[in-house]
Image (cartoon, rainbow, N blue to C red; front, top):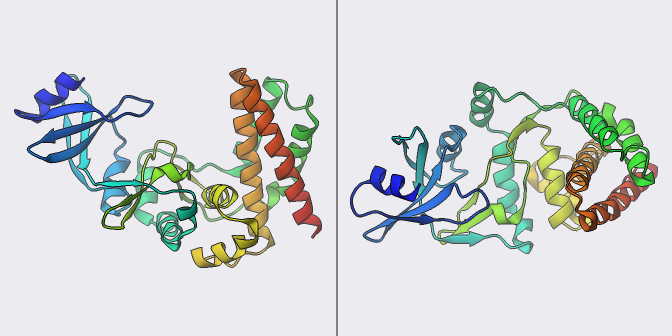
Length: 272
């Protein structure tokens, strides 16, 4: 692949792997100039670039073997640390994403169908039944009952483009103090509570949740928190299935411990 890329770029370019699990990303360098290259990137990248959510897209080329290569501006920067996830700039970027009609239009044009809570709940139940977790573990049974109870609150919500992996390693801070959100492979059309719940759970102290939501642009009522807990609980159960299917017993136990905590938080919230 590197030889193909060097041939496609022309004389003088040196290409090397950029790391990552997929092996699809590369760095090209010539006379001190750098580009970030990726193979067979989604056409969604062009809109993300135009919206200023990812580094600028320079060009797109189809090479001789049929692959499509994209080149983005190379920016010196680093991932945010966990403490920096509390910054207002992160909330502002997420608000911009969730309210972008351009991003929504492109995902719909690409054939992405909205992920409704009823469909995801049904699919999750089938998955839990299929691997025998539904009725074998008390915490799982309790979680499914809580999801069923919360499900009506999640219906008829305004959906948005969601990143679905709000990990601090996916947020890049450049030397110019611009923040970009990268790695859009899991993007979908869903309830914004999907992204927000994940960010709050992992990075924001619970006592600061309401303030964060207000700063994001939400007046947080009870229904909002129920929706958020629904997606947090669902996400945990999906990861539980994922680790169980791969016989990763230590991670299964870790997910079960987290499941107990989420179940308890939901019950405490409902009776409060």
